[in-house]
Length: 220
Image (cartoon, rainbow, N blue to C red; front, side, top):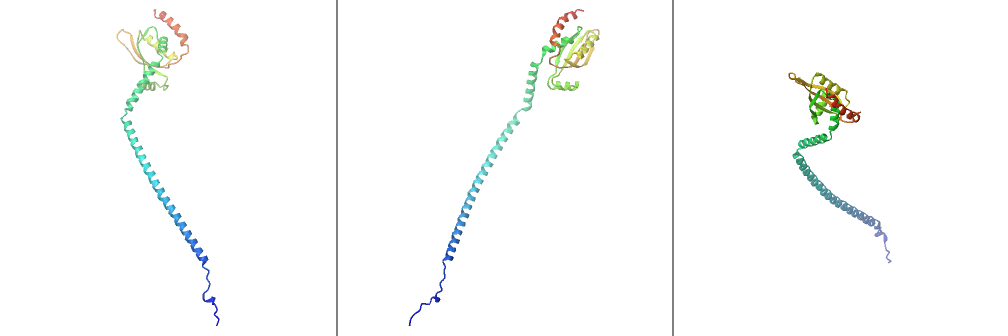
């Protein structure tokens, strides 16, 4: 009796595609796991770097705040008002040295009548000058308020002086602040006038003539 091989008893199954698919899935899973591990490690590393940078910034901010507190304490110790007063004083002294006294004396000589005499001539400075300019109605910083104190032989001499101040281009808005006479003595007066330092038209030409004419006027 012949034996026959029954192939149907052991059916043939091709498992190679499934195995390939399984291997591919395992490879893909391992790749994803590796990627996740790399990303997680990068996150941990970046987080540590960010925390270190943040700590450095906080330390720098604390140092800046300490320096700011130190500078604020030094600034509080400074006598700013005293320094401002010193600067104002120095500015006034510089202005005094730059004040054209020679021109002022020439202008005063041109307006002073022969029968009047000045005892003092005081230009105002600083805040006082600003207040006096405001009282006299002028805000021009180049103008200086002068206080003229003197005496006149009679009322006519005082009137002539005030008229001359009104007419002279270097003076403006003279005001008689005080006048008094004791018995038969001279007439004492105080005049406030605004003076504008600068080149007065005709000063250079008129000064020699005035100087030459002064002795002739003082004769009577």
